[in-house]
Length: 182
Length: 410
Image 1 (tube, rainbow over the protein chains, first blue to last red):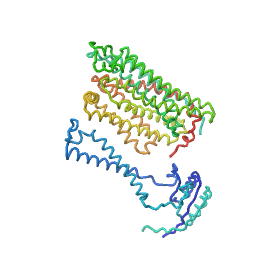
Image 2 (cartoon, one colour):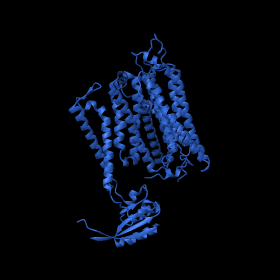
Image 3 (cartoon, chains in turn purple, yellow):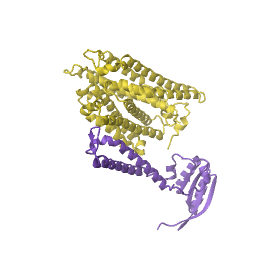
């Protein structure tokens, strides 16, 4: 069991924020989170956020959509009730592939897009009735915040770095007890 | 920003390459006219040689045209990211007069019956009782002939004027101070808005007039868009390759990695636009199954099957797989490698559009004629574009989005 200090470093601009992030990471301090009123480009590698895996999800959802559409059309148009459309009887799937491509494409896009959106919302737990997790509401207006959870020794170091890089406030928000995972 | 490397000097090696390409190409073109004969077909007048010249003229002219469109699009959309590569785009656009002269040459040669690319140019095609009489063409001959020539001249004049003025305003803005030059930017924004409108109409109608009328009996409303998307991709690839090459030999330091990434995205996206239009044209005709429309794909399916599948694979599946990930678009070598292959793919696409209607069943597959002709026009294009590039500083001086573009990063 370890107790850690919660620190809010408040900045007025993104440039000193990024500088502070770089210096904190260089000093070996883990940045728990950063809150900004607008998306700051290129912040991910500086904060040390691992690369998103949503692309892998998108691929899986896309493949799912493609398979479902193919299965659906095969069942409807070939297996269950073959039709003769424009002199092209649906006795098999492959000889009518051009006709099936638009629907395959739409279903792939549909599943990939909806799957990604839902994954994002669930992963961030942005569900109806979810409580806002923003520790300082000013970050939705004009303030930028670095959120840290550190032990005493690191807190001192972080405090120095934050103040040196131009933090407007460094707020100590009490202790947090972190249970070991096993 | 490093300003001492703004004046581009064409490296001797590049100049030599373009000369060699042109020389080899010129020899092949001469050989092409000597050897391209079909003794048993009296309608065949070195058709394959002429069709190749036409394809080469059109393809590279279209790149310059699409670059002019892309330049106009950046102004009309007031986009910031592309400002640092504006001069590269401008250099590509000014191949337009050269390309159009070649087009004009081919058209004039057709009108004086040196070749038979356009069936409707034949004498007596609309006169009943004539040996050449064609009932279908006779019914729509009013659209061809003099009217066709008026339109052709109008397109050429309009495109060259718009491009010339866009380039001139950009250069004039450099001569003034930061504040005084803003007027030129707004002039270009307005001019580009008009150019977009004019281009939207003329790109489609010129495709019907110049390309679709090779198969005079046949018609497709998709043709304009289909060719436009092809030329757009080719232009984007040209710009990408130029930017990456210039960066490699030490110019364009202010062009950020993200700007290159963005052109890579355009390349990827427009490849799909091309596929979408190509497939839509095919699918509608395949599904409706009307004889007068299907004939177009029947010729291609029978004599040009390999080419048809190659084009679809190279221009669709290849960029989809290769350019999908972010890393591949940020890897310069990879981007250029994929770009070169799609570039060739789109040239083959133009070959596939032109050849069946002209050479038809005499086609024996791609050969030295296509290669030699391509080399000539590539060499000429390289020479003209690099020459244009050396005539102006590589960076606009007073563009309002310059700072934004120089710091473009994500």
